[in-house]
Length: 100
Length: 167
Image 1: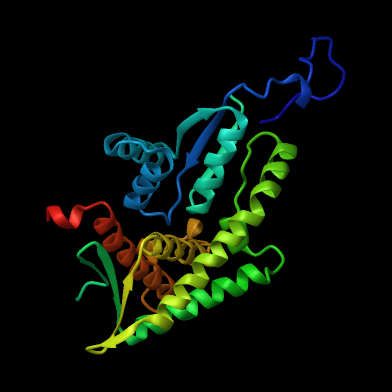
Image 2 (image 1 turned 180 degrees about the horizontal axis):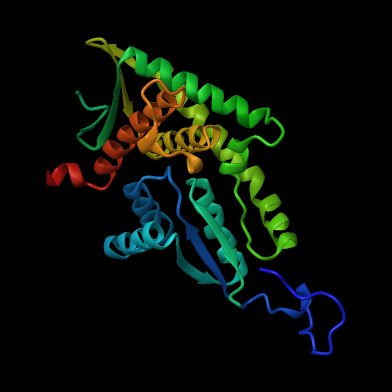
């Protein structure tokens, strides 16, 4: 998306630096759709990594498949990193981000 | 077609025909080489070590650096384990038979997935229209290999999920 450049009179929101952001604010862990990972495999991985019951794992897998992405966890940074680590280990495309 | 994975009591048995043994050994060896001596901009490396943080390049670099060594070590250990399984197997009725212990089914599942991801990355599967793939297309073979290994994964997942007992 294009953004306006040059001087502006409108106040610009200050960019927050790392130290100003509480480390405890939750990060969203997102799993993205992928043409290779099998649907049954993604369900299996969700159960392994998050301990989700079958119906929830299946629901989230379908969300990934149909919407292209699904929010699978919202956790403090370290836990979010652990989840991303585990999901990458299984070969899923997973990212974490601060909710905007 | 005979099953590649079957339940034997509490164990899972892997049984491969000789061409399948050769195929799996070759693909596992190739992936190991690709990970140990990564070429510049190798799509396989990009796929197996994907972005971790969105919207914050510094945090992304930080987290990926943090995870890279462990992810690589786990992937190489899995490949090593699978290559050893193929060495360990015994011949029975023209097949290689390996009884998998404890964590080995999970390792095999992960290695099969990594190999399929690697093939997919090499042939740029995201841009591929499978329905328009001609039989003599050079990509028809790698796609068929991915499907074959995917069928192995489905069998293994059915056993791990206990679905084979319900059938």
